[in-house]
Length: 266
Image 1 (cartoon, helix red, strand yellow):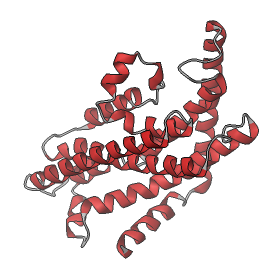
Image 2 (cartoon, rainbow, N blue to C red):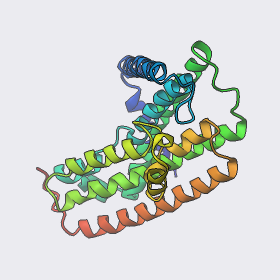
Image 3 (tube, helix red, strand yellow):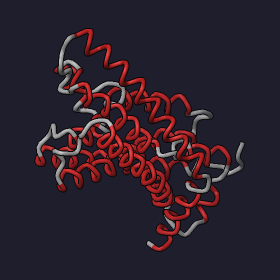
């Protein structure tokens, strides 16, 4: 555990080396998404004349897009593509020599990146609550715990799902298209581009059998109190099941792929 703790804090130090650039980028992107979502949905609500669309009011849907975009960054966590690059560039050699598990090392690094983006999410929600519209009144302590845990589980689940695509690099010369396709499906069917409640009921039922709703939508349902605690725990159980499925697939593909790995790099 000491080694993984060192890896975690080492990644945190790397992320905060250029603090100004890091926070300016965060503030700029958040402000941009706020302006875009504000005027987009303002026009949609004015055109339809409705006070609520898909179970969200105007103020809620604006905040929805801010939270969803930051949650999307948490899932990506700056670590996407690293495994494939390690294979292509021969950097996997050092991990094979390390006295720790490859996936444990990678997931620890991933969690360090995700932690920083989680802090950004907390800042964004707090700023919205105090300067634009109050949104935290209905959230209790248990809700905040479930919200945080669901984000963690969704992030770990997505990490291993993406790792499966990247491990194909043992056999393929370029897996970029697979990662892009996965990000698109996660964004569209995971509730980043549009809330899943705005899909037709038959589409929502089909999507519920895939892992995509359990990356982001579970956390958003907790935040907006659209699911009971029991329903949230059940969804978390499904997150855990998908995580073990993807983890097992990763370990299997990794062990098979190592026999194809030459370690020479590009």
